[in-house]
Length: 45
Image 1 (tube, rainbow, N blue to C red):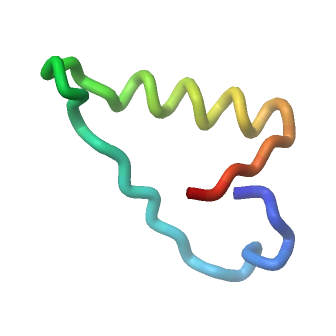
Image 2: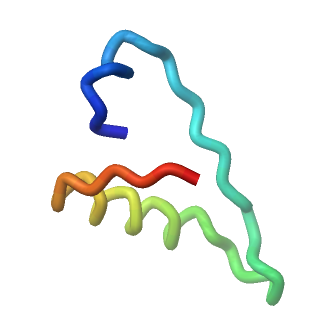
C-alpha cells in the first residue's frame, strides 16, 4: 500500500465480506488497513 513504486497505479483491494462464522469483516479489515497505514507497514499476500 505504501510502496512508492505503486503510487501511480490504480488499485482495488478485495477482502472477504464475512469470516467462517458469518461475521461481517469490512470494519475489521478497514481497522487493520488503518493500523498498517499509521505504522508504515505494507504487507503483501
